[in-house]
Image (cartoon, rainbow, N blue to C red; front, side, top):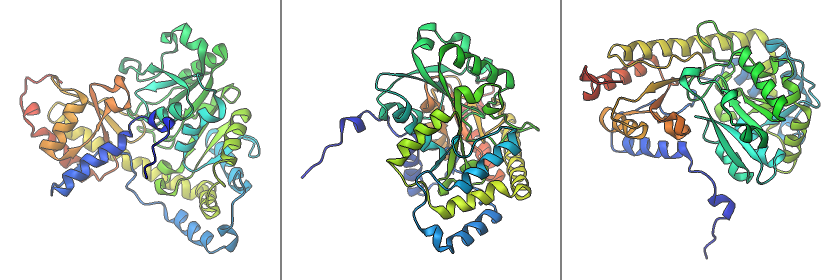
Amino acid sequence: MQFEESNLLKTLPKQFFASLVAKVNAKIAAGADVINLGQGNPDLPTPDYIVKAMQNATAKAADHKYSLFRGELRFKEAIAQFYLTEYGVTIDPKTEVAILAGSKIGLVELPWALMNPGDTLLLPNPGYPDYLSGASLGRVNYETVPLKRDNDFLIDYSAIPMTIAKKAKFLYMNYPNNPTGAIATAEFYEQTVAFATQHTVGIVSDFAYGAIGFDGHKPLSFLQTPGAKAVGIETYTLSKTFNMAGWRVGFAVGNADMIEAINLIQDHLFVSIFPAIQDAAVEALSNTTARQNAVKSLRQTYESRRNAFISAVRAFNWEPYMPKGAFYVLMPVPKGYTSASFADLLLTEANVAVADASGFGDEGEGYIRVGLTITEKRLVEAAKRIGQLAVFKDQKQEI
């Protein structure tokens, strides 16, 4: 007996990261020493104070029962206090917080919850590939808004055609940005609120890398902008801030109507998340001294890795877009190559895996993305391997 996938599943985009993993695993299986710079999977340990909180929580019988459908109030209160402490933003824990099993689920389920088939969603290009999954599952149309290097990969609202702006219902944005490492400015967020207000477009700020800023820069929360809560929400994950990617815990905060819709759809999909994880997340956010120390160490580590890698590639005149946040470095592809062909060359000839940036949208063509989730030693080794390729040994090669 055979069972065919639904027509809805057939509309889903190809899972970009799954194909990357398959290529790398095949190379490793053949005995190669592959340096994997292709994924954004944090390699550092979860801070001890959070692990101990989880261990204590799992010993509580009550934490092994079902959670409240919309999550524990103590976690929501910790989230609200975190936003007040870190960003000066007031959040109502009862009406302006949705607990998520990682921010990805919130971004993917939002079109189901707040859009109708045929509505239009604006997505950044390049952008996180799973945004497209949400569009497909919600049966909504999408238009992409280009992120250009000459505008520091910020959305240029003046370049969005009026016909598209008028029909758009929501817009996703992501700063610090994946894959570029760009950051948002206060002026840009003010422009975002103005665009949203003028065209009645809801804003979804993906703040996954909100803790990671370089050169003394602390990334801004969109909700710090006057009027932001009236037009949108922000999603946040503990995956990147606390190296808790496997725990699957995050949240959305902001506009009460949008939050209610997310909570309502999740009533029919989940029973929130494991209460012990929620209790550990409370400690992660509420232990201010431990949190600030952990985040400071995290930033220093990624900044040191960034600097080591960039210094190593500049030795053979390969110049990056200098990231100001997140944990990626966007590198230009040498003349004569596409993003895909150059990524394949690096894997085949140098045993270095990178992400083909065209997988994030056609505006990523001409770049590859390097992840900093590996030791400095291995990052420098990867750079040295790449520098030995003929394409870089030819001093006349244009980059």
